[in-house]
Length: 139
Image 1 (cartoon, rainbow, N blue to C red):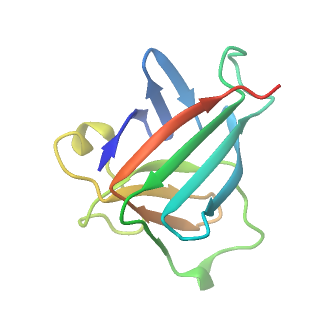
Image 2: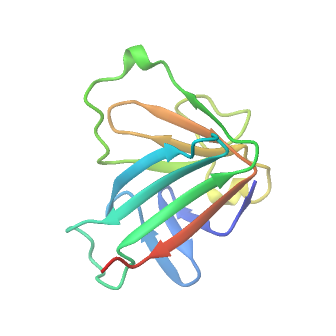
């Protein structure tokens, strides 16, 4: 999977010299696909707990190329969906629904996509050829 970022730790994206903590400093704004299903986007907005006011106000992760999405057993998921405490990492064919790949292992292997887990137990696997991070300032 090609990508224009690294995870410094789970959910902490290294973008050049900047560390973007999607777990603590951002809230999930939107998760969805385009109409054709060829792209998945996760959009985040900086929250009031962000310790660095220089962080971008919005961050988007876009997954493209041979995109498919899988979910764990939805019958075991507590409702409503709680997007606080979201975890994002990589996964490969060896990972079960509760495991993922840290950056150092993903750098030497070929991850299949992004592993997104929510505090209430929902896990989403986004299979893709490329994941791209974009930073946006909202006025």
